[in-house]
Image 1 (cartoon, rainbow, N blue to C red):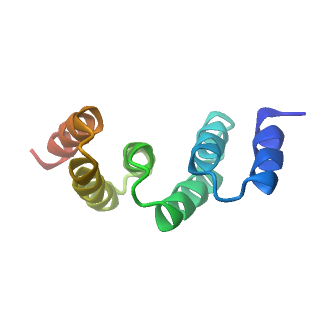
Image 2 (image 1 turned 60 degrees about the horizontal axis):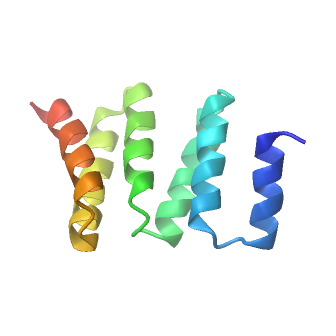
Length: 103
């Protein structure tokens, strides 16, 4: 059973688990399926906007797809969420990638 299949099986048992959905998105990226990864990331943001790690990885995916405006928007949302959560590490990372795009 592949890692993707394992994560999909785990998600059947725990469909609201943001960590599992995030991990599945990352596995899709490793497998070269960025469309599936994007769908997982977007689903995660709809279900759990406070899951801050998703903003960074979705933004990077959008950057690779040459969607700079989309990436900037995602980073801005992530900065808001990280700030609200008091997650200074994520806030610093998101600000850094955001500033790289706008300056």
